Length: 462
Image: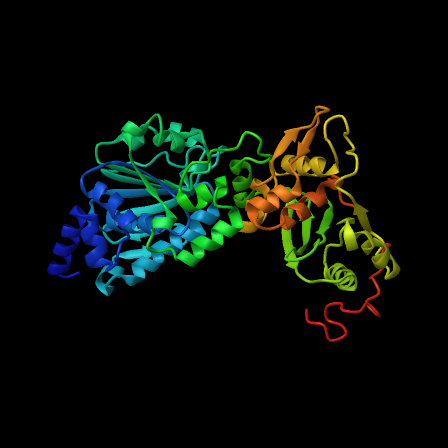
């Protein structure tokens, strides 16, 4: 770099706003600017609760580059509860903004897979924070430390306890940002009982220049505007957590982000058949505790449904041990049609039937959902906005006979503006909790001929 470039970097080191606007040539949002100005005013502990799409990860990337370029003897530990958050989101964001800098500054930064090196000897490193690895933020020594903690709400308390001493240094900056999914823990406390120690900010997607009104309206439709999911993922508010919710947002959020999951059990499918109107027929596929695929189709007749199910079965590398179908309406005839075509593992079940554990649950539907709740303690579901909204909309009550009973489906449809088809398909797979492999080598491929309206046949579109 030239002497002029060095002077610019030194000026930028004193002001994050200068660095972002002059060197990165970025235009921060009003919400980002509040946090930037707090840092420029010398605040050392920043905690940001944020909705989606507000630019919180972008802000963290700016801080990493700013801290590493403009200081002597600086180290930047970066952590998050999952490798996905670090390696698929934060590191690429840093790389993107490094490439937006003038070439002379780009040459001062090398973004590698496992490390970011600065020409002045500084570095930043990603470390996944897990309960069994409490040293994620430990062992860093430098004159200038910056702790970058993304999705801090999901980081185990022990990580912060181990790093507490290092995070209180005189020249240390600590930035926490998260979707506020939990109502306990270190991040939650930073916005409540320990708020006096932190500069706290809320990044509300409804107020962000990064987010369109159309996107907000879509999320209202998917989640329900009054739901905890909308509060957390859009407004950046902590959940209220209804006392009669079947699932906590923490349970659902963990299930969408969990990286290590037991999928050694049997393949089980569940098909929720559309009732009428805008409802969708949804096929959920689960291997052990891992829901690996959820597919929705609209406007299907009985032959269409049979053709779709047969096609999916024949194409599957891992054949299901059983396919549970919601035996209401045309779904009641589906097992027989599939059986005629050679697919004899389709079983019709009714949520209104008596539960296997009839002393505890009012009916099968309640039992399915609580089996699903148990499965998600260490299981995994897709990060699907509609599915999350539908799971969070499930409420229970205690019946007059003292049993667990779910609120009626029409009430959920009223809240969401749609039927909870994806959640119901997942719950159907829990009609029978199969934890061991069950082979179906004796079941031949189903006959695809003469099934009118099936996918890929008879001119119908797949």
